[in-house]
Structures are given as structure tokens and as C-alpha cells.
Image (cartoon, rainbow, N blue to C red; front, side, top):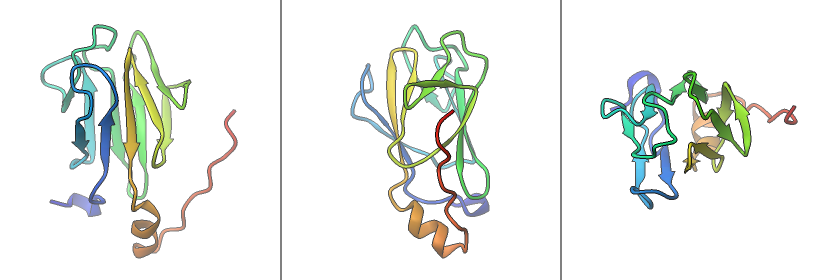
Length: 123
């Protein structure tokens, strides 16, 4: 299933907590993460909000968006309301750490005629 050319083999690796070691595949354009059982990725971490954050595919990149969570969303150890993700980025929600994995990003972007955006220096 590849709606709107959603890249294959994109995952969130759960690095700690009750689901440690699990690889959660991103197979939809919008994936909601939180403590609520209705979330696509349900985390039992009491420091994670019911609907904590979302990962959204925007045509040629994935963006992590905080949904007004109490404990914020951290990407690469900095708090963000919204942050574009690259392969290997560490995401922290509450006490739970996730690693965003898109190992074939360069090949996928090239195959679709998209120039890879260079990462700007962090503010």
C-alpha cells in the first residue's frame, strides 16, 4: 500500500519502554503517536500525552509535529513544535525514545526526481 507514493520501509524503532525493540512501520501519510489506545502508535508511557504528536508525510519528506503535548516533543534533544525528520533522528516523547528510520531516503528521492534538502544548521 503506497498512497500518494508513500515511501516503503520507513519505521520508528522503539528504543525503550514496554515496546522496546519494536519496529513500527509508517504505512500512512499521517501517524498519530500517544497514550490513547486510538493512536496509531500507542505508548504506555505516563509522561506521553494522550495524543502527543504526529508524523506526517508531505510529498517528499516526513515532519514530526507536536500536538500541544504537556511534556513536548524533542528531536535530536531539542524541543520542536514541528521538525522535518531525517534517517536516524532520535525522537523523545515523555520518557520514550524512538529512532526515525528511512534508510533508502536518498535512493527514493532520486528515483522520484527530488533533490534532497540540505539540513540547515539548527537554530
